[in-house]
Image (cartoon, helix red, strand yellow):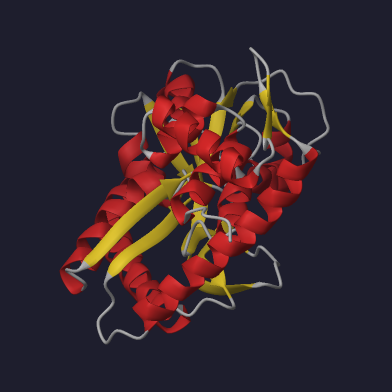
Length: 312
């Protein structure tokens, strides 16, 4: 019987996924020498190399690729056993891994965290902020329990629970206060600043304006809504941002905010999790907490947003 450990499998999976000892060590919260030692011991137990090593990169061997697939299946099964144990408890406790897209996380997470820690004092929240494709992959790989993203995702293995909808607002330079609000045809001819590729919000904005993603663009692609708004304040162009982000992102920039003409662009935010998750009942309860948190936040923001939009 091979004397390998779950810890070694987790370290191996991280290295196989990251393809870099430093990033894998950071992912596992250990030092790089400790990670290297565990991988070396695993290879000695197996009696064959898992990685091809060169000064600049590492890659899986043929055996390593097969082993990686089986290792992920084992780790996913272990995660499901842990989920079963958590689901059997009367009170939700222990680790809960939640992924959130960047256009939601800075605005909604503080309220969610406050509500969840108050209702579930024994809950150990692990939060992950990244773009939708990565969150969905990590969710299906068993590295996340749930994710808060824009719907729909149309993935048959996932449960989707809509939580709330919000409009996109137009952000222009402050000198545009009171000017007529452009329609979508006019927006296509303006310098529209968007998030970089990979963000679902970018795709939603392009879809509203009926701009083909393959069309060459000479405009700015930003890594965050904050960057886009600051660029608008510098007079570079205009942008769209979700309603929830308006109070935070526009408070320190010389910009004006306006509602677009009907039908206004909007998105639906929801929670998703694996249909096979033993935590489905608890995650349904969590989704209601997230819904209420969003309602509380939006109610507190509405007066400020309405004032700004009226001026715009």
